[in-house]
Image (cartoon, rainbow, N blue to C red):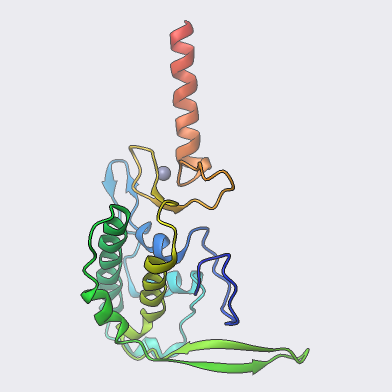
Length: 199
Ligand SMILES: [Zn+2]
C-alpha cells in the first residue's frame, strides 16, 4: 500500500484508517487516564486491524497457533515505533530487524478483470506464518520510512496523548491527533483560562 496521494496501478482494498497504517499501528497503544492501553489483545484483534488497513486475511491464518499472530504483531509494532521515532529524531536507523521481517514476505501479483472489462492488479500475500500475515504492514512501514515527509509526521501536541499523525492539511499546521478529542480538550482548556483571567 502506498501513502495516499501516490498513484498506483495496484488495486488494494480500501484502507479505512484516517492515518497511514504505519502510524495507525503505533496508535493501537493509546494513553488512557495516564496509562498505556494496548488495544491489540488477541489474534482476532490483529486480523480485524489488518482488514481495516485494507489487507483482509483469508482462512489460512486460522491454522496459526494461538497468540502467535498477536505476539508477532506486537513485536513488529514496537520495531516500527523505534524506527519512526528515530527517523523523526533524525537518528541513524537500525534496519536489520525490519529487514528480517521483510525477508519473510511471500507475495505475487494477480491480474483480474471485472464485469465492465477493466483490468486491475492486486498483490497477494502468502499467509501461512504470522510473519507472512503481517508482511503487508512490514512492507508499508518500510515504504513509509523511505517516502513519507517526516516534517509532516508528528506526535499529537497534547500532554495526555501519545498518538501520531501525518499532517496532510493544506496549511501543514495540524497539532492534534483528532479535533474531536485532543483538539477540543485544548480549546476548552484555553477558553477556561481566558475566562479565569478576565474574572
Ligand atoms: Zn491526541
